[in-house]
Image 1: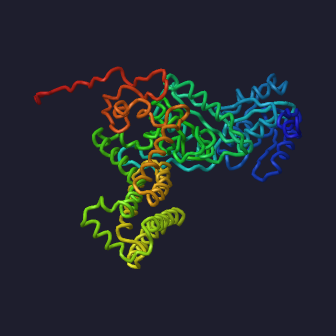
Image 2: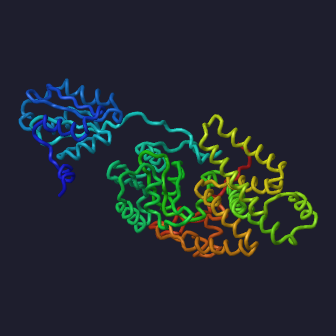
Image 3: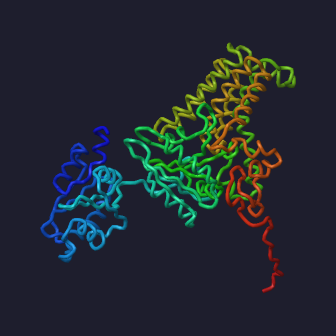
Amino acid sequence: MNKQNAEAHTPLSPSLQANVQAIRSRFGESSDVVIRVFRSDAAPGRRLAIAYVDGIVDAETINRSVMEPLMSLQLPEYVIEKGARLLEALRGCVVSVGSMRDIHTLDEALQYMADGLCVIMADGSAAALTADVNGGEERSVGIAQTQTVIRGPQYGFVESLRTNISLIRRVIRSSSLHVQIHKVGKQTHTNVAVLYVHGIVDEGILKEVYRRLAAIDIDGILESGYIEEFIQDETFTLFPTLLNTERPDTVAAALLEGRVAIIVDGTPIALMAPTTFFSFFQSPEDFYQRYDIATFIRVIRYVAYVVSMLLPALYIAVTTYHQEMLPTTLLISLAAQREGIPFPGLVEALLMEMTFEVLREAGLRMPRAIGPAISIVGALVLGQSAVQAGIVSAGMVIVVSFTAISNFVMPEFNMAATSRIIRFGFMLMAGMLGFFGIFVSGLFMLIHLASLRSFGVPYMSPLAPGGAAQGLFRDMFIRMPWWAIVMRPLDMKMRNPKRRPNKKKPPAQRHSGKP
C-alpha cells in the first residue's frame, strides 16, 4: 500500500489536538477551513471541536443547530463516562441537525467536510460525528434558458444536485422513484445521481448504467458532458446517443417511460438513457398542446431537419450538374444572378456557410447586450455587400439563410449541431458527383444510423426494427391523443409496459342545458 492510500485509511486519533493538526495539514492550512476548539457544558472537563469548510455550509444552521446547543445544554454525568457514550449523547440529545452519522477515519472526515458537512470531534474519542449543514450561495430556480416552451412548466434545473432531485420529486410523488448517488472523479469526488422508477425501468439497462459509471477513472467531473462521453455506446459518431435536458418535466416524462436519468452535481443539464433518433425531434410542448397541432409541428421539424442538411447540396447539384431539371424561367434567373461570379457553386456555398458559422459563434461568445445585434447586422451587411460586390449570388444567400433558419427549428441543440456538420459533407459530395453524391452520402448515413445503439436499444427504433407502420403510431411522427396512448415505448423490456389499462376514451356526459 502506497503512502497516499495509507493516509486515506488513517483512523482518527483519541487526541483531539492530533486530529485537528491532521485536518489542517491535509487541507494545506487552507484559509477557508474553519476549526473551532472549545469547552462545553455538554462535556465538562472535555474539549470539543467542530470543523467545516467556509462557503459551502450554512453558517446560520451551524450557529443555531450545532454551536448553540453544544454551548448551552448540559448532559447528565452518566453519559459522559466514555467517548463513545458522549458522541451518542450529543447526537441524540444535543445537536438538532436532521442528518448525522458516525465516522472513524481521517479520510471520511476530510471527504464530508469537502461535501459541505460539519465534523464534530471530542477529546478522548477515536470517532467523530458529521452534521449535514450544507449550504452556501446557490442560483435560485428560474426559467429554462435553452429549452423554452409557450405552454407548460417554465422552471429549469440549477447547479445544485439536491435542488434538482427535489424538482423531479415534486413531479413524481411516488416512493417508486429511486435515487442512487455515486461519487466520480478521484480529485473532485463529484456526486452523480442515478434516478429511475422502480417497477417500470429495464433492470438490464439500469445495471449497465451502474457498470459504466463505475468504470469511469478520471481526476474530475466538471459537467455532465464528461459522463456522456464516457458512457455512450459509440464514440466515433456525430449523432448523440444520450438525450440531455435542463427541464425537470422532461426528465420526469422519460422516467415514466422506463428510462434512466443521470444528474451531475454542479450542472443544470441532466442526461437520459437510452434514447432514439426520433426522441430528439420531440419537444415537451408536444404533450401539452392538442395532439393535432403537436403532430403538425413535429412533421415540420422533420422537414426542417432534412432541409438544413440537404438544401445547399441540392442547390449546388442542380446549378452545377442538373440544370435541365429546372424550369426555363428559373434557370435564366439563376444564370443571370451567377453572371460575373468568380467562384463555382461549391466554393460559393462553402464561403457563405463558413461565414454564417463564424457569425453564429461570434454572437454566442460576445456580451449579451451586443451579441444579437452584431449577429443580425453582420449577416445583413455581409450578405448584401457580398451580393453587390459580385462575390456570391443572391440565390445562394437565400439558400444559406433559409438553411440556417431551418436548423434553429430543432428542439435539441446537439442534434442541430450534427446537421450543421453533416451539411458540409453533403455539399462536398454534391459538388463532385451531383445527385449521385447526395444519394450515396444519404445511404451511408442511414446505414450508420441503423448500426447505432443506445445502451443496447436500436437507435432507429421503432422504425427499424419494427417497421414503419408500427413506428408511425408509436409517438414517432404522429402524437396520438393521450387517451389512445396505452403502451409505453416498447424499445426496452419493461416490467410494466402499459400506461393505462385500455384504449377507451372516457365517455362525455351530455347535458340538456336545464338546471
